[in-house]
Image: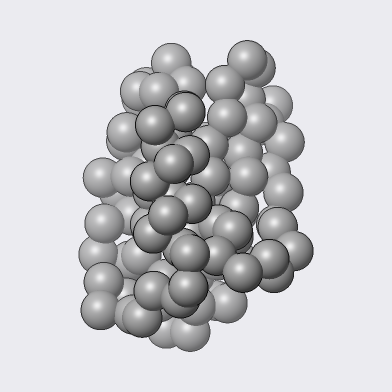
Length: 96
């Protein structure tokens, strides 16, 4: 699966899980995660990857780690998608 296909499908799944959330696809700033999710008074950043083994580009690790210390941020790929979505639901207080 291409990263763009995974990201498109993930956005649709996020819209279903968090119908009141604002979900933004971020512009390509070097290293800034792909998606911003705003839900109530909480937020998250997600960096989409086509697979667990996909290359991390310059500054991606920095931004994901820094944003995770502030709120919630993860690298997300097909192999860990369910785990990340479960954690995100717990963070947002919307568990299944």
